[in-house]
Amino acid sequence: MTLRTVLGKIQGELQKREKVHDEVLKDMRRATRLSKQAILFTHQARFEEAKKLLKEATELFGRLHSIAKTYPDMLYSGMVNAAYQEYAEARTFVVLVREDRFLSPEDIKVPSIDYVLGLADVIGELRRRALDSLRRGDVKTAEKCLHLMEDIYVELMAMDEAYMLVPGLRRKSDVARHLIEATRGDITIEARRSSLEKSMKELEKLVKKKSKP
Image (tube, rainbow, N blue to C red; front, side, top):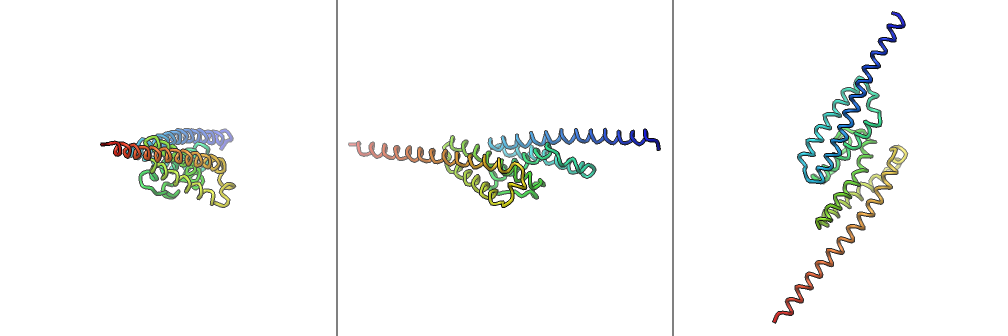
């Protein structure tokens, strides 16, 4: 076999690999968009639509796993990790809102590191849900969101060496701490306002009752 033949064969393999790589990136970008939209639909209580989007994203990851049998290195790229994290965030958030429980990395077939980073991002979505609830006057749901935010943060902090083993977790945890403090303040203010409004209404009723002849 001549050198030209050998190099020609290698070139063909590289071109095929490049095509597969482009397909994987396209799929991962779509999986990321689907997950982001599923989170939005969950905030809007459009749960069935969110479920359909996440099902499609799941199928895209299934295709990735099939490709990885031939090209295992395809699993290790920034775009794939970002897609996994967004997907983990979406799946976790949806189940927390609908079923009040947590999923494991095994449940959603996501690498542990991407699961942890996605879980940290759920805190931001819970703050958004808490603020939406406060705008509706639903302090109870807002308080529930705050408790979940605190639970996630505390458990992440309890992971002894996570900061060294999970790149980016320290930054996300710092952001999460500030979000929790801000949310606690927002809820406290709204709870006091609601309590004052209730007291004023009760006093108004009492005054009207006493003023009657």
